[in-house]
Length: 443
Image (cartoon, rainbow, N blue to C red; front, top):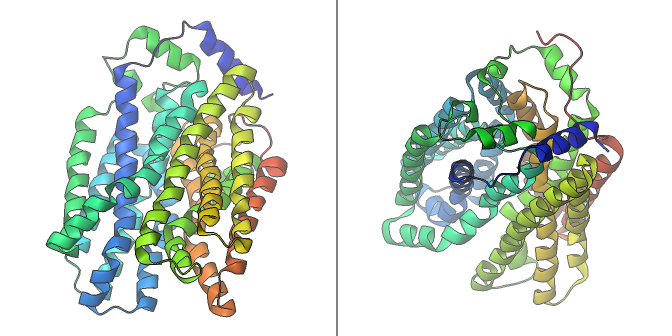
């Protein structure tokens, strides 16, 4: 059992349990809406692609490069974004990030060729980089440890529901006003939400509407961080210290594995349905939504089970690691789709696998639990950098496999194998889920 986890669970239960107030629910709602906009902005290009490529004269190979451009700068900006977050805090970092990525989304609607489009994708990747580190840091401050998994699940579900729920509206906008209006509309929504974030967000120690009882409850569970913890000087020895911790290495490999499955569904899955399964596009559109709905269920189920296990056992090792390991094992079942003939059976297996992948989103809760004090942003940025290498590698690897073999058979084996690699990382590398203490000087 993790000593850190047990001590904080006991301490939190020593304080009179308080119901989450509108204030904490409001903070969580801000994160959920922000995450939904984040994923809409990075994936709306897929909806615009057919008309955009025709108007700008971009072939399929170049369009593949445009799709991947976001992941390169998004991954590279994770550590600088985390350092910026630790220095300037949640409110300023998220406001600037949200404003800039919304502007770059809007600028997509003004693109005149491949160069301007690539610049927009690069800018979008850089400006979106701090989003999830901020989410993790906010949850760590506003929620006691035994509630963080459910809180993480609530905002993470926006990744999966946003595009599924708003696709009809987005297709209507493009059909009625063109692909440029699509980017401009989504960008304007993001800018308006950035203003709402600036007006509504407060750190818990600054919020006058947070009762003393609830303040004490959160603090007893390891939350409520003061501004003094936000000043961190960058140093390479600091990066090396974090990378030397087995918790960071294990969690990063595990998240890379989960993201490999996610990226497959975000990129190649509709093409697989159309080319390998020979489904008409109308059927593809219907079937493609079902795994995303299943993944959203997996996110919520994983968060609920994790916090229940943590409260029942006091063990973060059991409460955090077990649901993720089970989720990765479920995701590995994607390999079985290679031998199925029924379309219904295929979608059921894919939905089962994506449900499991949704549970892997708990990895962000692990970072909330394990990040050293004052280094939540840098730790989350380093973690997200490793995890989002999957966004670069997965489309390329699958593309090479399909080009070499003419089908997706080994591509699905690659995806399932990556999920099993994540299981190995959580079982044999991660070790105890506890707050990391750095023994050497941080500067």
